[in-house]
Amino acid sequence: MFWVKQEMFIGAAGWGLRRIGQLPVRRGEADRRPLTAATAVLRGGGLVGVFPEGTRGSGDVAAAQHGAAWLARTSGAVVLPVVSRGTRRPEGARRRWRPRVDVVVGEPLTIPAGGGRTGLAAATETLRAELAGMVRELDELRSRT
Image (cartoon, rainbow, N blue to C red; front, top):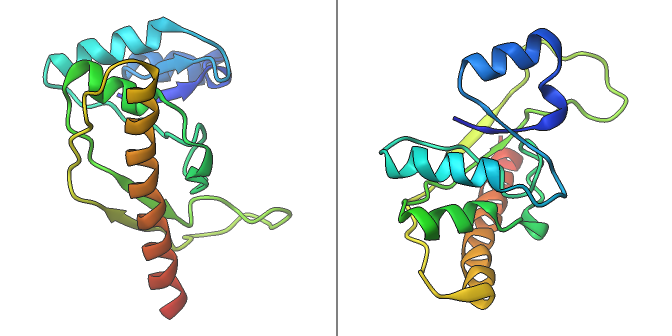
């Protein structure tokens, strides 16, 4: 299951997203429903995909949101960090056929279970720093080829 921005749940696309178990998220607003549903999935042994930067694969993890760290702390789930490059079309560019997409999968992370907002901020920073390092690594690899 992935968290998907609420705007995608319109018409046939929304029907399809719901049928395959995706969860709508209202970005920039407090909404406990996706958190509760995702926690239940994780506690049941399932997987949840979250883009901590708040948008699909932007790679800009400088402003990571707290959702992924909150889920890991609350459910006890291990985080498998993944970064990708090449999924977005450059601004103003025409459609690309068969774009090169590169993906790096990191080592599983256990998020510290510190309490309160300070603990959540520290957990988010742990996750953000790991992802930022992976983005740099992937950018280096892409620049060499």
